Amino acid sequence: MGAAGMFNRRQTRNGGVFTLCLLVVACTPVDEPLEPEYGAINTRLLDGELVSIDVIMKNATDVDQVIAFNDCAAAQYALIRGSGFVRRVTNDVQRRGRTWTGAGVYTLSDQHPGGGTAIDAEVVAAACQADGIPVV
Image (cartoon, rainbow, N blue to C red):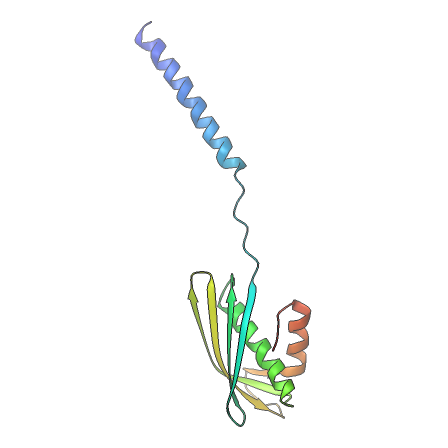
């Protein structure tokens, strides 16, 4: 058998392996995003109307999802304390692997405190429950 015949066999054999690899890759399922897991909520009254709320969750898609969880807990906490509104003062989100933590400080208020970070506790708590986000 000449050199041309060997080359053709190798090319066919390698081509077959290459095709097989493409089929395996095409048939391999793509990793689907994991569902968010809402974990612990820790609330601590700091001073009269100032409250610290820490949350832990896994598989969050982004920082905003962790802040939303924190805001949900704050809204429900405000309702428990008899306040109609809460205002986010600070919120720090950290990520370690699939685990996210949110540490927020909020002020409680009976009247709308003004500003872009004011939360109507009743409206937000209801929306959180409808969206399946746990609250305190």
